[in-house]
Length: 439
Image 1 (cartoon, one colour):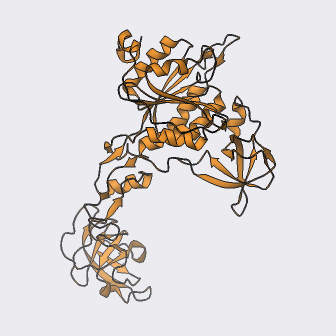
Image 2: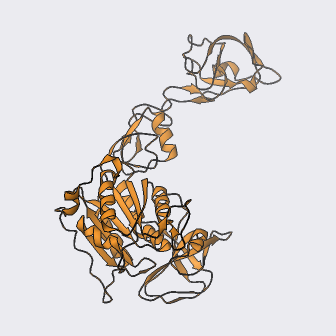
């Protein structure tokens, strides 16, 4: 049964939505291929940032704020003590020492969250707890450690200076101060800052709702028995994890067999909850590449051969009445993951309004000679190491095969071997994408 109790709508499935065509795709080279950069920029040009809405500050962690946020209060809100001790007039204890301590009557107590019972008279002290407001006419705090902690009278054996251990109103944040600029991504410490000034909701761009679908009649969910000709569905798990790591809210639908009607119905059902759909498999030239056959019936699509390895066959579309973006990736697991890093992660980040869209590259020297295929941007799996000076080097992990998941799991970087390169000597400086950096 379709999700959400939605009735199968055969008429809708037979009807191709009347949607505007996609923007003109980039021109291909003499070999009929577009570059990785051209394809990525094309996808980014076809999607828009999601509309902002009010979100609780805790739920907004990691999201992009859509307005300047200023403080409506001072921090601290009032002069308060940074220590447990006694509020005094500094002049009354300016000569206190261990040899000649000063003894003062204790005339009250100020706990945190309460006001002083009265002004502080000369020659007296008032017990005070950390965070409590400073009594009027007090100008210093003597910490417990410099006293005998008396309750009726207190002996002070260390001098204090004016302002000692007092946190002044507004010394951290003042009314009207800019806390977060529009476009900032809300981090852990930002959540604390917003809460401290009394802000419980902010306008942010939401996490994109990403639906992940893998295709192929040979696929079986992990945990179930396999027939001899079947394999486990790793792609939907891999891509769902990658999308979640990129900040999306993910719905892993799982897999669908090589049946055009089933795929069409499944995608149609998912449009109600998707800001982005990712499919894997079915975009090459095979007789059972159903994604390439079916998706044009649901909207405007673009299928391209990209000058990269792995990940040459790529697809993109805007489908359904809401022109929901769909990125159609190849079926080999390493190809799917590399394509995600190259194209889908930037799209997710644009939907979220988080910059930079593209994972920043860092420089590392080749630890050994590397070969590549001229005319293709090679995204090889690698391990990056840093020496005591912080200089990075990178070595490849395993081969270039697009099925080698074991090697992919060992890698912590993708090594960018440029399209005009067939051989990289050891010691050459290369661009690498660090995969384990915080998003």
